[in-house]
Image 1 (cartoon, rainbow, N blue to C red):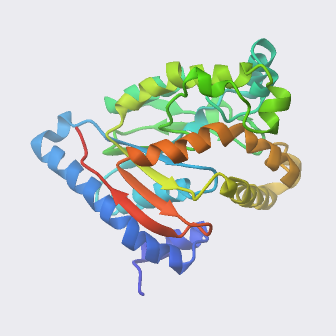
Image 2 (cartoon, helix red, strand yellow):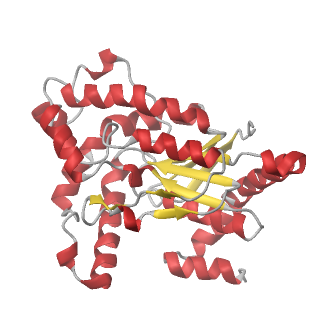
Length: 310
């Protein structure tokens, strides 16, 4: 099939096979059309007073959510609409702040990932500014290869208002668990390194108190659903190899302090198991669009309940 030039350029940049584009046309394009139609309808009423459409995008590590967000933004921009993609990963606390959290709460908080390791005050402030289409402020950027925030001089400047804002994250949209579900460890990490449940309890309270309130900004939720948590290790391993290759091309692995070995990744994904398994069970019941995937990330089913609320 002959794709538009901007689509083929995107595929080359992202190293995507034609099968991805075929799947995207069938599965993603109709949803993009729905979002575009809603934005256009709202702007016909009063463009100057229209707030951006906020979309939450969930998917476990390696599911393709960042690529999907970029694809949606690409289509929107070629239809004359502006789109900003944010990742909650860019709102991670600095390494020094996480070390402080590890010293005062629990050692496992030195590792980024779970609720409690993000600057949710800054995230809320950013969402509020975007909602009011403010400009001349910066959005943080996190360097995973160095496992630390980039200097503020390297943050991204917002110089215009946006029609669509997509926020993606592996647990974005997750709800906290009841306390009795936290009582027993679910893997070796929790059993050996968090036997009293201090770490998972604090992460759970953080999710409830600092993240769930931010969900009110969002008009619709999209989910890329993995078959099970078992896929996370394999997909996360692929991500790390891509990061390693990228860093090597940029000037050498001496810059890659944060890149993990397969053994480190196997331990690392245990940090995410509790919340990921809960998301896989609960979020498909209420998310507006759910794309169910197989082991090869091919979409086998779509559930679309999309009725965007303004």
